[in-house]
Image 1 (cartoon, rainbow, N blue to C red):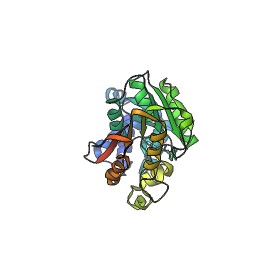
Image 2 (image 1 turned 180 degrees about the vertical axis):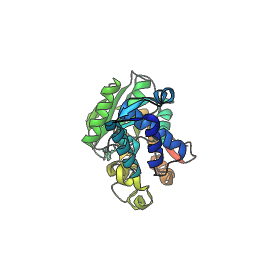
Image 3 (image 1 turned 180 degrees about the horizontal axis):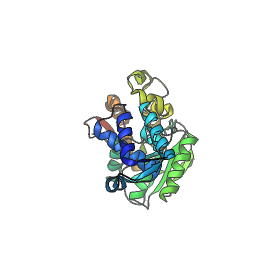
Image 4 (image 1 turned 90 degrees about the vertical axis):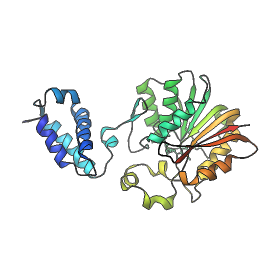
Length: 282
Ligand SMILES: C[S@@+](CC[C@H](N)C(=O)[O-])C[C@H]1O[C@@H](n2cnc3c(N)ncnc32)[C@H](O)[C@@H]1O
Protein backbone atom coordinates (compact mmCIF):
# COMPACT_ATOMS: atom_id res chain seq x y z
CA UNK A 1 0.00 0.00 0.00
CA UNK A 2 1.24 3.52 -0.75
CA UNK A 3 0.31 7.04 0.27
CA UNK A 4 0.59 10.36 -1.56
CA UNK A 5 2.96 13.04 -0.25
CA UNK A 6 0.05 15.42 0.01
CA UNK A 7 -1.90 13.10 2.35
CA UNK A 8 1.22 12.39 4.36
CA UNK A 9 1.89 16.10 4.85
CA UNK A 10 -1.66 16.57 6.08
CA UNK A 11 -1.32 13.83 8.68
CA UNK A 12 2.13 15.02 9.83
CA UNK A 13 0.89 18.58 10.30
CA UNK A 14 -2.20 17.43 12.19
CA UNK A 15 -0.29 14.93 14.40
CA UNK A 16 2.51 17.30 15.42
CA UNK A 17 1.61 18.84 18.75
CA UNK A 18 4.70 19.83 20.52
CA UNK A 19 4.92 23.62 20.61
CA UNK A 20 5.24 23.98 16.85
CA UNK A 21 3.81 26.89 14.91
CA UNK A 22 2.04 26.11 11.60
CA UNK A 23 5.12 27.24 9.71
CA UNK A 24 7.45 25.08 11.82
CA UNK A 25 5.17 22.07 11.29
CA UNK A 26 5.63 22.46 7.54
CA UNK A 27 9.40 22.77 7.93
CA UNK A 28 9.47 19.68 10.15
CA UNK A 29 7.51 17.76 7.51
CA UNK A 30 10.08 18.61 4.84
CA UNK A 31 13.01 17.70 7.10
CA UNK A 32 11.45 14.31 7.96
CA UNK A 33 10.53 13.73 4.32
CA UNK A 34 14.07 14.32 3.14
CA UNK A 35 15.58 12.27 5.96
CA UNK A 36 13.38 9.20 5.57
CA UNK A 37 12.75 9.21 1.80
CA UNK A 38 15.52 11.38 0.29
CA UNK A 39 12.72 13.30 -1.46
CA UNK A 40 13.19 17.06 -1.39
CA UNK A 41 10.78 19.93 -0.86
CA UNK A 42 11.07 20.64 -4.58
CA UNK A 43 9.79 17.13 -5.34
CA UNK A 44 6.81 17.81 -3.11
CA UNK A 45 6.13 21.18 -4.69
CA UNK A 46 6.32 19.80 -8.22
CA UNK A 47 4.51 16.49 -7.60
CA UNK A 48 2.58 16.24 -4.35
CA UNK A 49 0.65 13.31 -5.78
CA UNK A 50 3.82 11.16 -5.72
CA UNK A 51 3.36 8.05 -3.63
CA UNK A 52 5.71 6.73 -0.96
CA UNK A 53 5.83 3.27 0.57
CA UNK A 54 4.00 2.31 3.73
CA UNK A 55 7.38 1.74 5.47
CA UNK A 56 8.53 5.26 4.67
CA UNK A 57 5.18 6.58 5.82
CA UNK A 58 5.50 4.73 9.12
CA UNK A 59 9.06 5.96 9.67
CA UNK A 60 7.94 9.55 9.21
CA UNK A 61 4.99 9.14 11.57
CA UNK A 62 7.28 7.49 14.13
CA UNK A 63 9.48 10.61 13.80
CA UNK A 64 6.42 12.69 14.62
CA UNK A 65 5.75 10.60 17.73
CA UNK A 66 9.34 11.15 18.91
CA UNK A 67 9.07 14.91 18.30
CA UNK A 68 5.82 14.97 20.27
CA UNK A 69 7.72 13.28 23.12
CA UNK A 70 10.25 16.13 23.05
CA UNK A 71 13.12 14.39 21.21
CA UNK A 72 15.10 17.05 19.30
CA UNK A 73 14.80 16.79 15.52
CA UNK A 74 18.60 16.68 15.34
CA UNK A 75 18.52 13.40 17.27
CA UNK A 76 16.00 11.94 14.84
CA UNK A 77 17.96 12.92 11.72
CA UNK A 78 21.34 12.64 13.53
CA UNK A 79 22.30 15.85 11.73
CA UNK A 80 22.89 19.45 12.80
CA UNK A 81 23.95 22.48 10.84
CA UNK A 82 26.68 24.71 12.21
CA UNK A 83 27.70 27.74 10.15
CA UNK A 84 28.15 26.16 6.71
CA UNK A 85 28.91 22.63 7.94
CA UNK A 86 26.60 19.63 8.16
CA UNK A 87 27.56 17.69 11.27
CA UNK A 88 26.69 14.28 12.59
CA UNK A 89 25.28 14.44 16.13
CA UNK A 90 23.94 11.95 18.65
CA UNK A 91 23.03 11.76 22.33
CA UNK A 92 26.73 11.93 23.32
CA UNK A 93 27.33 15.47 22.04
CA UNK A 94 25.74 18.83 22.62
CA UNK A 95 23.65 19.95 19.66
CA UNK A 96 25.70 22.95 18.50
CA UNK A 97 24.07 26.27 19.39
CA UNK A 98 23.82 29.50 17.34
CA UNK A 99 25.82 31.45 19.97
CA UNK A 100 28.75 29.15 19.35
CA UNK A 101 28.61 30.05 15.65
CA UNK A 102 29.17 33.63 16.82
CA UNK A 103 32.13 32.51 18.97
CA UNK A 104 33.72 31.08 15.81
CA UNK A 105 33.23 34.43 14.02
CA UNK A 106 34.95 36.20 16.91
CA UNK A 107 37.92 33.81 16.71
CA UNK A 108 38.14 34.17 12.92
CA UNK A 109 38.44 37.92 13.38
CA UNK A 110 41.67 37.53 15.38
CA UNK A 111 43.41 34.41 14.12
CA UNK A 112 46.25 34.12 11.59
CA UNK A 113 46.20 31.40 8.93
CA UNK A 114 49.09 29.19 10.16
CA UNK A 115 48.51 29.09 13.89
CA UNK A 116 48.12 26.14 16.30
CA UNK A 117 44.64 26.09 17.83
CA UNK A 118 43.24 24.01 20.69
CA UNK A 119 39.47 23.47 21.06
CA UNK A 120 38.87 22.37 24.68
CA UNK A 121 35.66 20.33 25.18
CA UNK A 122 35.29 19.82 21.45
CA UNK A 123 32.04 17.77 21.53
CA UNK A 124 30.88 17.36 17.92
CA UNK A 125 34.06 19.18 16.84
CA UNK A 126 31.95 22.09 15.60
CA UNK A 127 34.30 24.91 16.67
CA UNK A 128 37.59 23.39 15.57
CA UNK A 129 36.20 22.01 12.31
CA UNK A 130 34.62 25.36 11.39
CA UNK A 131 37.92 27.14 11.97
CA UNK A 132 39.78 24.55 9.92
CA UNK A 133 37.25 24.76 7.09
CA UNK A 134 37.78 28.54 6.84
CA UNK A 135 41.57 28.51 7.36
CA UNK A 136 42.93 25.19 6.02
CA UNK A 137 46.52 25.90 7.13
CA UNK A 138 45.64 26.01 10.81
CA UNK A 139 46.84 23.10 12.94
CA UNK A 140 43.73 22.31 14.96
CA UNK A 141 43.57 20.03 18.01
CA UNK A 142 40.51 19.08 19.99
CA UNK A 143 40.24 17.51 23.44
CA UNK A 144 37.29 16.09 25.32
CA UNK A 145 36.86 13.79 28.34
CA UNK A 146 34.16 11.87 26.54
CA UNK A 147 35.42 9.20 24.13
CA UNK A 148 31.87 8.95 22.72
CA UNK A 149 31.99 12.66 21.86
CA UNK A 150 35.46 12.30 20.33
CA UNK A 151 34.17 9.46 18.12
CA UNK A 152 31.50 11.82 16.76
CA UNK A 153 34.04 14.64 16.23
CA UNK A 154 36.39 12.23 14.45
CA UNK A 155 33.58 11.07 12.18
CA UNK A 156 32.68 14.68 11.37
CA UNK A 157 36.29 15.47 10.49
CA UNK A 158 36.38 12.43 8.19
CA UNK A 159 33.01 13.21 6.54
CA UNK A 160 34.06 16.81 5.93
CA UNK A 161 37.56 15.87 4.74
CA UNK A 162 39.12 18.16 7.39
CA UNK A 163 42.25 17.33 9.33
CA UNK A 164 41.90 17.83 13.08
CA UNK A 165 43.75 15.95 15.88
CA UNK A 166 41.71 14.59 18.74
CA UNK A 167 42.91 13.48 22.19
CA UNK A 168 40.96 12.17 25.15
CA UNK A 169 42.02 14.53 27.91
CA UNK A 170 40.41 16.61 30.62
CA UNK A 171 40.76 20.36 30.43
CA UNK A 172 41.46 20.21 34.17
CA UNK A 173 44.71 18.28 33.58
CA UNK A 174 48.10 19.68 32.73
CA UNK A 175 47.99 19.88 28.92
CA UNK A 176 51.69 20.69 28.36
CA UNK A 177 52.11 17.38 26.50
CA UNK A 178 50.15 18.90 23.60
CA UNK A 179 52.76 21.64 23.10
CA UNK A 180 52.10 25.38 22.88
CA UNK A 181 49.27 27.10 21.03
CA UNK A 182 48.60 30.60 19.72
CA UNK A 183 44.84 30.18 20.20
CA UNK A 184 42.73 28.39 22.83
CA UNK A 185 38.98 28.27 22.37
CA UNK A 186 36.33 26.65 24.54
CA UNK A 187 32.64 26.41 25.13
CA UNK A 188 32.87 24.56 28.45
CA UNK A 189 29.96 23.10 30.43
CA UNK A 190 28.72 26.19 32.26
CA UNK A 191 25.28 25.55 33.70
CA UNK A 192 25.25 25.28 37.48
CA UNK A 193 23.60 22.16 38.94
CA UNK A 194 21.27 24.48 40.87
CA UNK A 195 19.96 25.78 37.54
CA UNK A 196 18.78 22.35 36.35
CA UNK A 197 15.14 22.99 37.35
CA UNK A 198 15.10 26.13 35.15
CA UNK A 199 16.44 24.31 32.11
CA UNK A 200 14.04 23.36 29.30
CA UNK A 201 12.98 19.80 30.05
CA UNK A 202 13.85 18.63 26.50
CA UNK A 203 17.40 19.84 26.94
CA UNK A 204 17.68 18.27 30.41
CA UNK A 205 16.29 14.93 29.23
CA UNK A 206 18.04 14.63 25.88
CA UNK A 207 21.41 16.34 25.96
CA UNK A 208 24.51 14.95 27.73
CA UNK A 209 24.80 16.28 31.27
CA UNK A 210 28.58 16.13 31.00
CA UNK A 211 28.29 18.78 28.26
CA UNK A 212 25.82 20.99 30.12
CA UNK A 213 26.71 21.11 33.78
CA UNK A 214 29.66 22.36 35.75
CA UNK A 215 30.73 19.44 37.93
CA UNK A 216 31.03 21.40 41.17
CA UNK A 217 28.92 24.10 42.77
CA UNK A 218 31.53 26.63 41.64
CA UNK A 219 30.20 28.21 38.41
CA UNK A 220 33.75 29.24 37.48
CA UNK A 221 35.19 25.74 37.92
CA UNK A 222 36.01 25.13 34.24
CA UNK A 223 37.03 28.77 33.65
CA UNK A 224 39.61 28.46 36.43
CA UNK A 225 40.93 25.28 34.76
CA UNK A 226 40.99 27.07 31.37
CA UNK A 227 42.93 29.98 32.85
CA UNK A 228 45.45 27.50 34.29
CA UNK A 229 45.75 25.83 30.86
CA UNK A 230 46.26 29.22 29.23
CA UNK A 231 49.13 29.91 31.64
CA UNK A 232 50.70 26.57 30.74
CA UNK A 233 50.21 26.26 26.98
CA UNK A 234 49.17 29.61 25.48
CA UNK A 235 52.10 31.39 23.85
CA UNK A 236 52.81 35.01 24.84
CA UNK A 237 50.76 37.19 22.50
CA UNK A 238 48.26 34.34 21.97
CA UNK A 239 44.52 34.60 22.59
CA UNK A 240 41.98 32.62 24.59
CA UNK A 241 38.32 32.80 23.50
CA UNK A 242 35.54 31.49 25.75
CA UNK A 243 31.80 31.13 25.63
CA UNK A 244 30.36 32.36 28.93
CA UNK A 245 27.40 32.01 31.23
CA UNK A 246 25.81 35.47 31.04
CA UNK A 247 25.33 35.60 34.83
CA UNK A 248 29.04 34.99 35.49
CA UNK A 249 30.55 36.87 32.53
CA UNK A 250 31.96 39.71 34.64
CA UNK A 251 33.32 37.33 37.27
CA UNK A 252 35.00 35.28 34.53
CA UNK A 253 36.57 38.44 33.10
CA UNK A 254 37.83 39.37 36.61
CA UNK A 255 39.48 35.97 36.81
CA UNK A 256 41.49 36.73 33.66
CA UNK A 257 42.33 40.33 34.62
CA UNK A 258 45.72 39.56 36.14
CA UNK A 259 49.33 40.33 35.42
CA UNK A 260 49.42 37.42 32.95
CA UNK A 261 46.67 38.63 30.57
CA UNK A 262 45.78 41.89 28.86
CA UNK A 263 43.02 43.22 26.60
CA UNK A 264 40.41 41.19 28.49
CA UNK A 265 37.11 41.91 26.74
CA UNK A 266 33.54 40.63 27.01
CA UNK A 267 31.30 40.55 23.93
CA UNK A 268 27.52 40.31 23.68
CA UNK A 269 25.79 37.66 21.59
CA UNK A 270 23.11 38.58 19.06
CA UNK A 271 20.49 38.41 21.79
CA UNK A 272 22.36 41.12 23.69
CA UNK A 273 23.59 38.74 26.44
CA UNK A 274 27.13 38.87 27.82
CA UNK A 275 28.41 35.74 26.11
CA UNK A 276 32.06 35.70 25.00
CA UNK A 277 35.44 36.53 26.45
CA UNK A 278 38.69 37.30 24.67
CA UNK A 279 41.96 37.66 26.57
CA UNK A 280 45.53 38.04 25.37
CA UNK A 281 48.39 36.22 27.08
CA UNK A 282 51.23 38.54 28.04
C1 LIG B 1 29.07 22.79 26.21
S1 LIG B 1 29.75 21.35 25.43
C2 LIG B 1 30.52 22.09 24.02
C3 LIG B 1 30.67 21.15 22.86
C4 LIG B 1 31.10 21.87 21.57
N1 LIG B 1 32.41 22.46 21.71
C5 LIG B 1 30.08 22.94 21.21
O1 LIG B 1 30.42 24.11 21.35
O2 LIG B 1 28.97 22.59 20.80
C6 LIG B 1 31.10 20.98 26.52
C7 LIG B 1 31.99 19.82 26.11
O3 LIG B 1 33.01 19.65 27.10
C8 LIG B 1 33.21 18.28 27.36
N2 LIG B 1 33.75 18.17 28.71
C9 LIG B 1 33.10 18.10 29.90
N3 LIG B 1 33.98 18.05 30.90
C10 LIG B 1 35.23 18.10 30.34
C11 LIG B 1 36.54 18.09 30.85
N4 LIG B 1 36.79 18.00 32.16
N5 LIG B 1 37.57 18.15 29.98
C12 LIG B 1 37.36 18.21 28.64
N6 LIG B 1 36.13 18.22 28.09
C13 LIG B 1 35.08 18.17 28.94
C14 LIG B 1 31.85 17.64 27.16
O4 LIG B 1 31.98 16.26 26.89
C15 LIG B 1 31.31 18.47 25.99
O5 LIG B 1 31.65 17.86 24.77
